[in-house]
Length: 156
Image 1 (cartoon, rainbow, N blue to C red):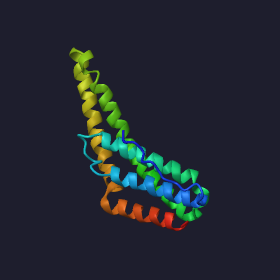
Image 2: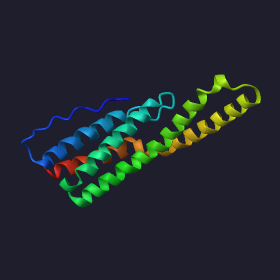
Image 3: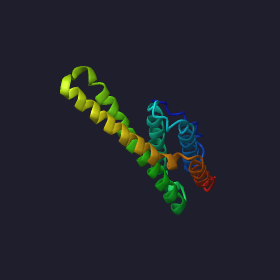
Image 4: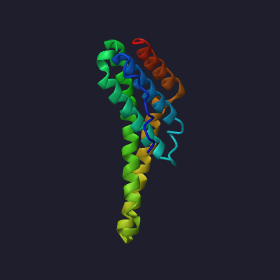
């Protein structure tokens, strides 16, 4: 899992400036983690991006009073939608990994059933990936970036 970037804050600055800085850093982490997120061979990318959305969401919730209500609500709503789509995909990644780890412990008819279950989960994983794709499309992320930058700019 990718570590959170340290956020440098000026303790003498207004609280709203801290809010803007934290959201700015957490948003940038999210966008950096979006690269390759649809790659089904590297499921850790989804995990890292999902963690980044949770960090950003937490920052948005903690600092909510600092931001204009309507702008904040819209930004948070979009981050939550992205997190939900990432979560759907991630849950399947975890299930597949767990079941694949059981392969050596299962034999015969049970092994065939396990393989069928894994294949079913892989099909669901591909569908979840297809559902995730619009949320991480360049244009959609660009729009989210602008929305978050506008939110940060509103308090600076």
